[in-house]
View: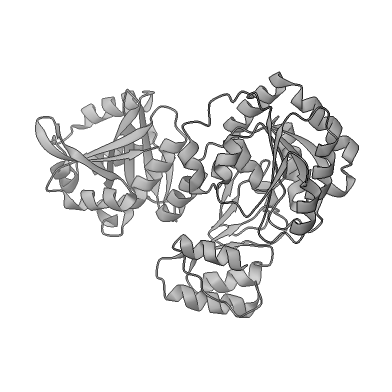
Length: 455
């Protein structure tokens, strides 16, 4: 749509026109040719038409690929990753995925627009109802072809007493705009189209009536209790799971939702302040807002993965730490005796202030290690790459995996790296991984170049 195309341009996104039928062979071939002009790029596809033949052509071209999916099923998935951010998504949804395909499942991977992060310092507060009454938000997707919005508006008019601020937001492609405008004339219901400040509106909302799609995750991040209406088959499971998680009241399939049901459920919820507080708290726990960064770190680190180190890794870690290049980059560059290393590892594997991981390549072979250690809310990072794997760009990948670990770990809020001034390779690795340079510091009485990453 024209409005979406303009928004993409304003965001610095360059659109390319594909002539083939979406998801067809010609589309795949055109897209593969386009990717060849952007080495290292990832192709992300979102749509039910991008099936196995399409994915096979893309993968045969050597491209890296992530498929956004919310339905599962018997289809084959040869892509590198499948992302399903919905509640209840498990590996059983993808019985025929390729062995190499990795699954990113659940609400820890929920993708939020960056505008929501400007409100992160307020999302945990308990919002009280002001003298103007509760703020109700109605948002039912971009197009709403069945005009479910009209049904909700008519029901809200019947709520007694309606001492509330009601905002109805519709998308730019909604074909019912003029009819909706006439429906709200002379009422306290405000109608908005194609807004760009949804995060601010959600943060001011006490109850939302929404579809069971991606908007529900944005509302959950903002801690907004919901009443969900299922508008499409792929929202049915989500609506049920949201209700089971205690963050919404699922009204069911839109054709079966009556005015009477809407009025009754809304009136009941408006009167139950305790339930609203509980639903809000549950919603905030469901979505922490770091999903986009988790996915970005995972893609940029591909094909590397991490596993926790064990005592069985003692000999490997000892050999790595005594590598001449590793010792020369350390602030204490003397060799590490085997007995000292054994005692150190046994202590740190059980230390709650320390985490040690082994980085594996696509064949499962260890290629390096990373350690986070800190007794306050900041961890210091240490990493090394095995000699035979240096020069392959693995260091920034391992750092990104450590960043992803931080997102799931309540122990630390940030990571600091201290690097010798002459160790320019490590400095480049932290810069490539997204760490920010900080003023020079001292470690063991020696000057160090500092870098920091904050959750």
